[in-house]
Image 1 (tube, rainbow, N blue to C red):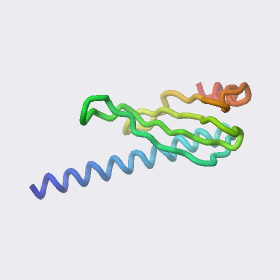
Image 2 (cartoon, rainbow, N blue to C red):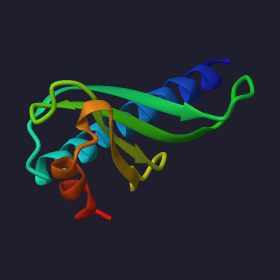
Image 3 (cartoon, helix red, strand yellow):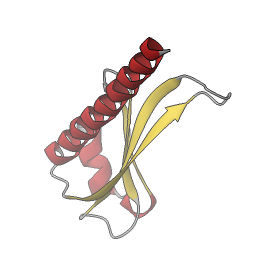
Length: 104
């Protein structure tokens, strides 16, 4: 039982470190696009069944260039490799879209 608890604590610790690293990676990409980050919300994406596997991470950014809306970054789990980046709401404007196209 002691080994199980130790293994679980290690796994949870790694998960927290991975998501923190993903936040840093996503923020760097947004800042490289010359956006000023006002706030961000991190989300773990999982398969729908109970206890489903993590399928990725999503970070929602409020940036100074938009009054409302978000710039959103989807990443792979563990590696934090960026899969998609897009804008939503009032951030979905030509200037923001042009900056994001430079990523793809």
